[in-house]
Length: 98
Image 1 (tube, one colour):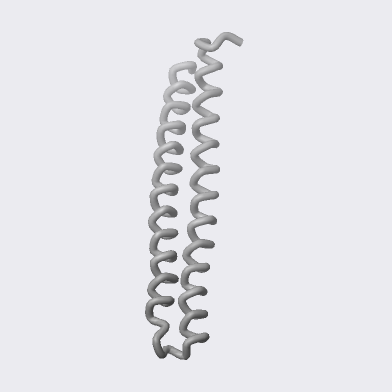
Image 2 (cartoon, one colour):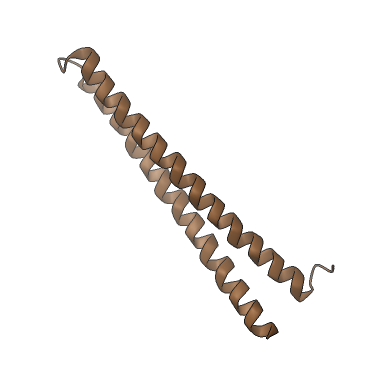
């Protein structure tokens, strides 16, 4: 199959579409896991220090949760952009072939 054939381009767009879906799913799962891990560490810091001087440890756990949430959103947006680009290009390719 030649690289510049119509079928080759359609296959590349499908790979882009499926890659976007995988990036979206993986980033969502990893981001949720990181957020829950950071919140768990915050509550664990409160439990071990009985709320006395453990606010620094709580803040560290919440910072981890917020950072994980930010990366989750960025990764999900990248995945959605790949999905949209791949879907639109595959749709246009299929429409032009018919």
